[in-house]
Amino acid sequence: EAGVAQSPRYKIIEKRQSVAFWCNPISGHATLYWYQQILGQGPKLLIQFQNNGVVDDSQLPKDRFSAERLKGVDSTLKIQPAKLEDSAVYLCASSLGQGGDEQYFGPGTRLTVT
Amino acid sequence: GEDVEQSLFLSVREGDSSVINCTYTDSSSTYLYWYKQEPGAGLQLLTYIFSNMDMKQDQRLTVLLNKKDKHLSLRIADTQTGDSAIYFCAESMDNDMRFGAGTRLTVKP
Image 1 (cartoon, rainbow over the protein chains, first blue to last red):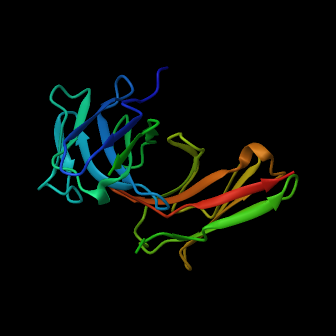
Image 2 (image 1 turned 90 degrees about the horizontal axis):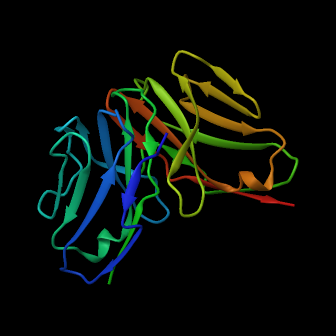
């Protein structure tokens, strides 16, 4: 079974530029999550999708971050414009359902904003 | 600060047991998890425990839960160099999962 795929693996941009990350969850997984992991910290949930609907985006900085999962499969996370404090690893995870279902994590995209 | 707290570092010798501790704050959490993260990789679920259990054993891993004190521990028996990684404790209630900052385990030969 293929795991969660993310691209790119690394990205370096200057502040005020835009960036987009892509995630392809495990086939058949209805729930998709985006996490931000700042160096030395645990992952923090940014947004959760159930199929193509948003379940929780309370921690998403909506003035600069946006995410979509149009067909209930792949998802993109965008930052526009980026700030220095956005430097982090962005992790995508998927699960069959919600609640206590095991979340499978992708390798992450490491973003460096200079 | 984090709702879930862990010590940041632990160093053990190969063959010894490792015990990683975690405290959480939400007594309503229904699941508690231990994840492992190796350099450059995503998080891998090691084990989890339901909040109505007090112990779970899975091969070299033993999870102990003290619900009264909101304390969770992960014991790794016969620790190997391949166990060197960052270990994250996480609590979950409904759709919300909260992670600790992670404990970096270093195993010395």
